[in-house]
View 1 (spheres, rainbow, N blue to C red):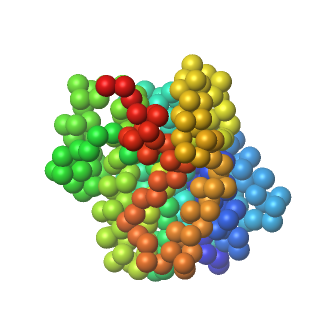
View 2 (spheres, rainbow, N blue to C red):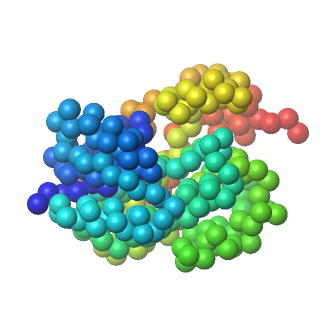
Length: 276
């Protein structure tokens, strides 16, 4: 039996983190598209890792539980990397809330129930969660603590309160950050840690599609006018995840790390600030 890592979302960021932190482990790779999971599994296995791919739908508790059960066949789950999700240009408001908001909350909850002592997880949020104006304290608490099966019934998440898919995505990512804070208390009872990372523009196949799509000029302007002057790479996100998932990060839990080349700083206090 081995220590086991669960990786949800078979993309460049998830793979970069798994390659940095999953050697010597059994890695279960779940993705809604099993072809993606199997492709990332093949790449990693050919580099000496021990992985298997499977279908996993983040919006379904049953699918999440199936993946956890599969992982437990190989040993104790000691690491979780959640890099699954959909973007504002990919999906409807309903799908974004169902996958990115509800699904992430369920995953954190269910993995938290079985994570081994000393275990650690990271979930990928987004700079978008930092762009939205502050919510009322009671709204933040609702996002953090509402039972998962009641989350999508919250007043703030009803159609009349959400402007568009970007607003839905911002709410979902704000929820991710607050949920990590609340779940870190529960994970702590098991001697485990959970944190989130909020990347900015990271070059991935999906991002390249965005750069060449109708919102391409928006994204190119964002990274050109941020302090770093460029987009980031999946490996730079993995650098942060490696700290959080190692003994060097043993005092870090319930936290969110913004890694966006300063784009959010520029959005509030620099050349990316929206015109009034």
